Image 1 (tube, rainbow, N blue to C red):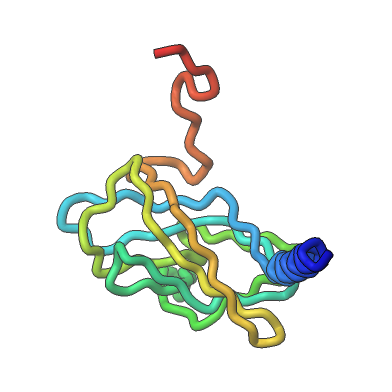
Image 2: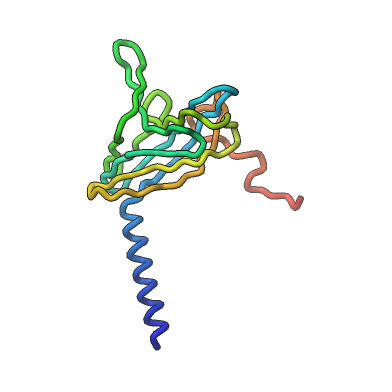
Amino acid sequence: MPIPTIAKQLTLAAALLAAGFAHAQVNVQDAWVRATVPQQKATGAFMRLTAAQDTRLVGASSPAAGVTEVHEMTLVDNVMKMRAIPVLDLPAGQAVELKPGGYHVMLMDLKQPVAAGSNVPLTLVFEGKDGQRQTQELQVPVRALGAAAAPAAPAAGHGKHSGH
């Protein structure tokens, strides 16, 4: 019976492939993008990244922006300075916060305003110790300008559905 043998081989190959991806994946939690006002051409994306193995965030891109970079903010001589960084180390098992006033993904040359309640597509590029690169596609929710960094509260009635 050759078909069950082929099916077993394909299942094994798929499992090994999935194990390879699981090995290098980065867990992205609490991702959000700050909403913009009309004429604003830049905003930030924030999240918590936890890698199973030593990994580096080496890039980001979004069709919503002409330029997408990983940035850090630091206090230098009592002045906050922001700069692009080529890599952000993600030590194995340690959460790295991308938050306002610290590391973040900067979305510049926005193609249109970013409205609260919408989602922004964002691709993160990670590199393992072996030099292999992987991308992770996200749909990041947009929060209002005054929203706190904590995750947004669920919508009213979410989880209870009436028969409407």
